[in-house]
Length: 330
Image 1 (cartoon, one colour):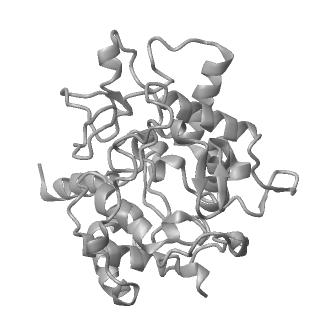
Image 2 (spheres, helix red, strand yellow; image 1 turned 90 degrees about the vertical axis):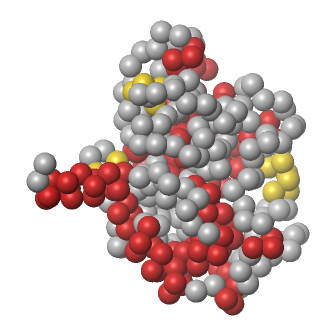
């Protein structure tokens, strides 16, 4: 094999590592048994078996297993053809290909799976298995109880930047809890949670957080150091411009600019974004960054331009403003 071909293969492999499973086609061979289903993913059957972390894909994955989706309603051998089953399938498609499935509610280029990796089923990457049983839940930002549908609307408004979105007729569309897209996503997340106890926090929830003792004070965060880390660890997938590198049918989510999440999203908080980076990135080698490095990298990403959320004045009216919610302090 000549040297130029080796370089091409290496670059292509690196370009895949941080791209979410949300950008993959879900064309997967049929399984013969339930055990086989648990080992299927976006690339088909895993070439070797591996131990799930409870119901989740373990964070320490390989190029083979990193795309696996243990529970996939498009391929589950026992999944029926009822109306509710189709709604769950619709929710899965929305989750994994959000801009394509609902362009009216997705001005950004983000899929749900860009943050909730492996279709919401990856350890330490904001997994949603069991999350449905926690709702209704008090939302500190809104200062009221949220249903699961309320939470999904919030994701559309902030992470998908649905504020001011227009449909094909030029009408402004803002998501509501009774939208069919919201109901379908809720159905998928509820299906993921069907084996978990209602009202009991799953043991894997909220684990992608940097411990308090390791937090760097806001005035000590260094975007310049973060830029160096971005160049070293992130550009192969996200590109130097942060917009994502297209490789086949896959593209990493945009990290800033008009197609990214807005400044009212949770990922626009330093410590929230740093926690995801620390435990879930780089995609194929998560955990290689230190707590401090993840925070400097988050500071660099958050320092870049992004859309403005116009309703920030309505947030944190009843609760104390988090110290890392920088866009609320301007």
